[in-house]
Picture 1 (cartoon, rainbow, N blue to C red):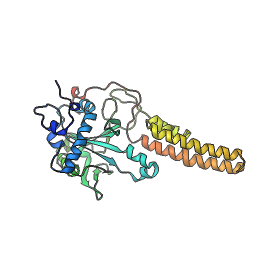
Picture 2: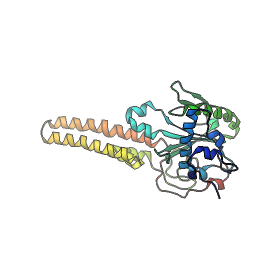
Picture 3: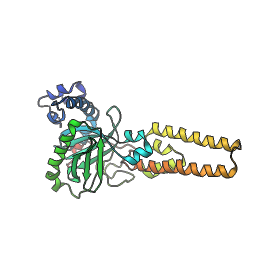
Picture 4: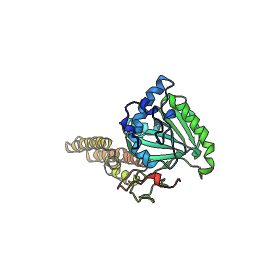
Length: 303
């Protein structure tokens, strides 16, 4: 009978497993050389338990996991426009395997969320620690990705893994680019932002539709993408603003010209800005729409 990580409550018990046949190098994932490493190992067991089912289907034949960690991608622009919401949108679990880096958006209980992507090691030009204690990845396409909140015990390990495998796997990587979005239904690589997956025909949500919905009324686009709490808060806030404008006009506290100016300003600053931001959020990855069967990647040839 196959061993399930959900059966364990302590990472020490997982480390004691012998001949487990699982695609994880537990001796490297769970480190015990410092207090911080031990603390992070407790979180890593929770991550593996939450992602176990998905990873079982996703990992290719012969692919093994070296390291599991977590962090938040920094984006000053998103922080300016989204505030605290940017933190929840940019939380990522990193799974460093023998073939690639897998990046997963996750929920607060370390359960997989919608966005999934991969980053071949050869697509990483450089990995190094940042000045503020984060991790910086310079990609082959010229982009920079900076992550904060990653356990200090993992940053050095991540740099070592990336440096060792980047050149080793360069020949088999094909054209060098950056992050590659994965289909949330079948986990195959997806080029661009099509309406459906070419492999499984699972449907995707449209960033354009999300933007247009938010232009119609703030919050509708975020709700469409699946960010229901944030979308509901936006809808309520926008409704309050419009109600205040209507009441002011009815009470004749402003003339018709003033009311018209306020309507235009409110529409541009609230509807227009929210539409642009929502479109940007919709382009952060592939959001699933209509579900499709999820095949077992272990039964598929390696890419």
